[in-house]
Amino acid sequence: MASPFCCTTIVLSYVSIALVVAIFPTLGTGSTRLATTSALEMEAKALLHLGWWSSYSNDTCNRCSWVGISCNEAGSITRIDCSRFAVSGSISPQICALSSLEYLDLSSNNLTGELPQSLGKLTRLKELILSRNFVEGSIPSGWGNLKSLNQLDLSHDRITGPIPSTLGNLAKLELLNLSENQIIGPIPSTLGKLTNLKQLDLSFNQITGAIPPTLGGLTNLEFLFFTSNQISSFIPSELGNMKSLVELNLSKNKLNGLIPSSLSHLSRLRYLSLDSNHLEGPLPSQIGNCSVLEELNLSNNHITGNIPFEVFTCPHHTLDLSQNFIEGKIPHQFHNHFCLHVLDLSHNNLTGTIPDLSWRLEELNLSYNSLEGPIPEYLSSQFSSDSFWGNKYLCGNQPDFSPCPSTPINKLKIVNKLKFVEIIVPVLCFLAFLALGVLLFLRSRAKDNIPEPNVTKNGDLFLS
Ligand SMILES: *[C@@H]1O[C@H](CO)[C@@H](O)[C@H](O)[C@H]1NC(C)=O
Ligand SMILES: *[C@@H]1O[C@H](CO)[C@@H](O)[C@H](O)[C@H]1NC(C)=O
Ligand SMILES: *[C@@H]1O[C@H](CO)[C@@H](O)[C@H](O)[C@H]1NC(C)=O
Ligand SMILES: *[C@@H]1O[C@H](CO)[C@@H](O)[C@H](O)[C@H]1NC(C)=O
Ligand SMILES: *[C@@H]1O[C@H](CO)[C@@H](O)[C@H](O)[C@H]1NC(C)=O
Ligand SMILES: *[C@@H]1O[C@H](CO)[C@@H](O)[C@H](O)[C@H]1NC(C)=O
Ligand SMILES: *[C@@H]1O[C@H](CO)[C@@H](O)[C@H](O)[C@H]1NC(C)=O
Image 1: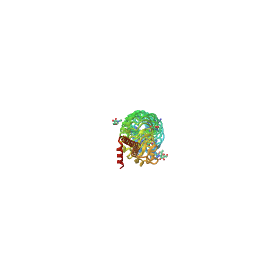
Image 2 (image 1 turned 90 degrees about the horizontal axis):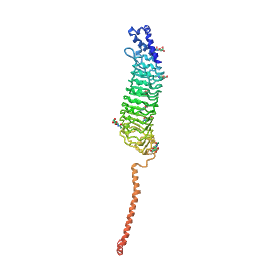
Image 3 (image 1 turned 90 degrees about the vertical axis):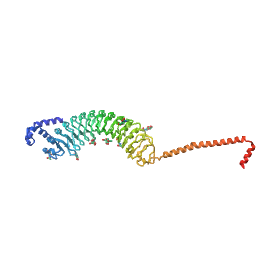
Image 4 (image 1 turned 45 degrees about the vertical axis):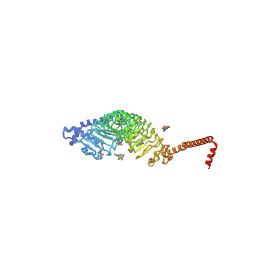
C-alpha cells in the first residue's frame, strides 16, 4: 500500500513540475535542470510530510541546514540524525523520496505507527536505526532490497510478526539488532548468508523453532545474542564454525540435547551463557579448550555426570554450574585459579570434600550439595553460611554448622591410639601371660628333674 503511494507521488511530481517552476522561479533556471530540481523538490515535500522539523522551521529552501540534516554537493539529503530529537507520529511513506539517504537515525524518540514498506526503496541506505521508539507492525519483506545496508537496529520497539527471510539478502549487513520486541516465528535459515555480520541480537522476543545450522556460516560474527526467547531445538554443532565469536548468549530459552563439543573450537570465545535451558548430558571435557573463556554460565539446566577437570583449566572469572544434576567430586586441579573470581556449584549433587580454593575468590556458592568434611578456615572467614548451607556433612567454625570433631591430623592420632588400645595392648598382655606361663612351666619341670638336696641347698641359698 505504501510503495504505490510513493510511486504515484513521483509520477504526479513529474507531471506538475512546470507548475512548480512557474510558482517558485528560484528553484529552476532551465529545462536541463528540470529533472534534478523535481527530485530535490520531492525531497523537500517529503520533509514536510515527515513533519519532524515543523516547530523548528518550514523553510524547505534551507533544509540542508536544518538540525540533524546533511546533504551532498547536489543538495540531496544523505543523512538524517534525529536521535533524541523528540520526534513523534509515524514515519511517512513519502520518506522513499529521499533517494540519496545513506544514514537514518531516529532512535530514542516517540515514533509510533508501522514500519513503512516504501523504506525498502532507499537502496543507498547504509544505517537504519529506529531503536527505542513505539514503532509497531512487522518488518516489511521489501526491506530485503536495502542492498547497501550495513546496520539495521530496530531494537526496543513494538515490532510484531516474523523475521522476513528476505533479510538474508542484505549482503553487507554487519549489525542486525531486533532485540526487545514481540517478534514471533522461527529464525530464517537465510540469515546464514549474511557472511559480513558481526553482531546479531534477537534477544527478548518470542522467537520459536530451531537455531538454523546455516548460522555456522557466519564466520565473521562476534556477538550472538538469542537470550529470552522460546527457541526449542538442540544447539547445532555447526555453531563451532563461527570462528570469530567472542560472546555467545543463548540463555533463557528451551534448548535441549547435549552441549556440542564443537564449541571448544571457538578459540576467541570469552563469554558463554547457556543458562536456563533444558540442556542435558555431561559437560564435554573439550570445553576446557576454550583458551580465552572468561565466563561460563550453564546454570539451571539438566546437566548430569561429573565436572571434567579440564573445565577448570579455562581462565574463567566466572564459572556457574549451579542448579543442575552434576555429581561426583569437585576436581582438585585448578590450573588458572588466580583468575577464577566467581564459583557457583550450588544445587547439584556433588560429593567429597571441598578442594583447595585458597586464592582470591570474590563469590563462592557450594550450597545444596552432598559435600562432607571441614569448611576450611580461609573460606569460613570470607563467606557466610549461605555459601555452604544444605550440605549435611560439612562441619566447621561457621554459624549453623557443627564444629568438626577434629582436624584430619588429630583424627590420625586417634586412629593410632585406638589401634594401640585395641590391638597392641591385648597382644602385649597375651605375650606377657604366655611368657609367665612358659616360665612357670619350665620352673615346675626343673623342680621335678633336680634332686631334693640341691633344692634345699638352693632354697637356702635364696633365702639367706
Ligand atoms: C510549520 O507548519 C505547521 C503546519 O502548517 C505549523 O503548525 C507550524 O507553526 C509551522 N512552523 C513554523 C516554525 O513556521
Ligand atoms: C515522549 O513523550 C513523552 C510524553 O508523552 C515525553 O515526556 C517525552 O519527553 C517524549 N520523549 C521524546 C524523546 O520525545
Ligand atoms: C541491541 O539493542 C539493545 C536495546 O537497544 C541494546 O541494549 C543491545 O546492547 C543491542 N545489542 C547489540 C549487540 O548491540
Ligand atoms: C546474556 O544476555 C542477557 C540479555 O541480553 C544479558 O543481560 C547478559 O548480560 C548476557 N550475558 C553475558 C554473559 O553476556
Ligand atoms: C584443543 O585445541 C587445540 C588447538 O586449538 C587442538 O589442537 C586440540 O585438538 C583441541 N583439543 C580438544 C580436546 O578439542
Ligand atoms: C547465570 O545464570 C543464572 C540464570 O540465568 C543467573 O541467575 C546467574 O546470575 C548467572 N550467573 C552469573 C555468575 O552471572
Ligand atoms: C545424590 O546422589 C546420591 C548418591 O549418588 C543419591 O542417592 C541421591 O538420590 C542423589 N540426590 C539427588 C537430589 O539427585
